[in-house]
Length: 254
Image (cartoon, rainbow, N blue to C red; front, top):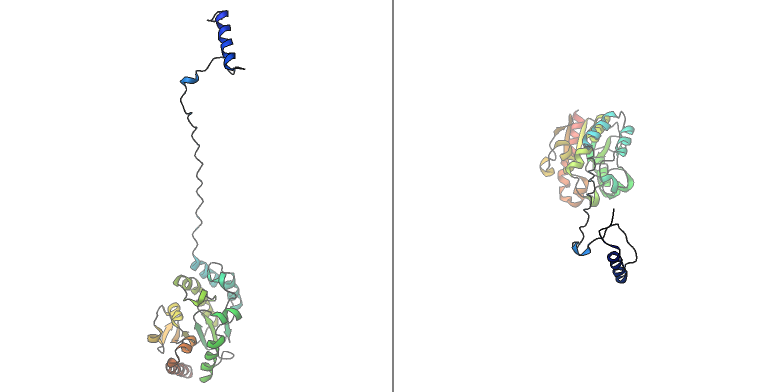
């Protein structure tokens, strides 16, 4: 196809472009740069594909604890099942699992609240000053944890700064406590402190509940002041002595 420009015109235009500094051509047809927009349109960024993480399957710690507790057939297996339970945050901050102490064939089972610093360090319930006071209280009515009393707590792990356990913590560990009582098969329960009454009786107000027999886990149960409370409030020891005599009378009459 013959060019629309004659030879001389084309050569004149080419020489003019050389004078302007053109050294090479990059296309078959010229581009009018003056007609282009001032700013080139930026390419749109492709939207990153939104990845929605799959929701974890809902976990019910109470149900898991209940199934784990139901499966055990001995105190040794129960202790191992509690040690393997990973859904309670208290375990992460505790030194030891505080399981139980005393004679598992005893007629009396004492349920305390939660481990304190001494219990957490030794891995046994009711040690330190509170434990020493409890031993003296039991001795006063001819009982002892070595022969006639078995002791445990509502919770096996110490709450941080000895705070009260939360209802969800009590709830998720209650199946282990219930199985504990079933395996020991005591004749009577002694619930020491508000937390014990809350967990087993679903009641609070130890000053109102103490000394009055109730039924818990199909057993006679009597609420009492916790020894740690008696150390802080020694004037309550007279009431505690009356409760101990009530316990002794119950054992003698049964």
